[in-house]
Length: 149
Image 1 (cartoon, rainbow, N blue to C red):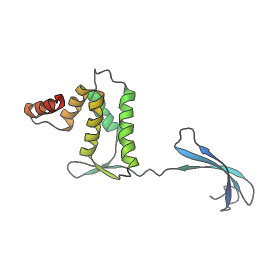
Image 2: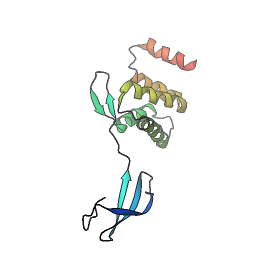
Image 3: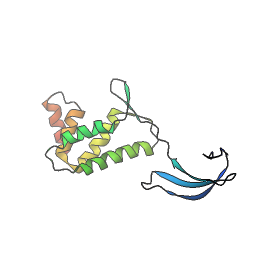
Image 4: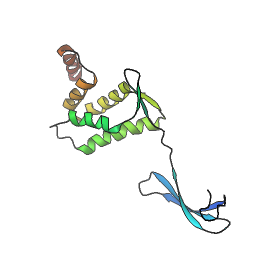
């Protein structure tokens, strides 16, 4: 790490601790040449998550896009927004922890449905009706039957 005062490339770590939100390591350093102390932060490099759409197009993962769908699916269901945020945190965390760089929109939809099923069955059906793009009442009925079993 280069000293901001003299430009020396050598420094020693005096103190190291996690930052307030545990997203980085805060390090106090001291330049071996001039003795100046300075702070650096070490963070995990976030590679962008790429979503492969049904038509083959690609876009970056948009958490808010999924949240809008969840909010629509849970209207009048008395599900706290914190629960929906936790659901999204879990999905995004799983994708990042597994080192996945690209994921299909179908995989994300299935992850959402799996978690929604545990939270609220009505919200599950509402989300599934949009996500799975039911063509007619029979497809919708089949989904309800499988849910009841």
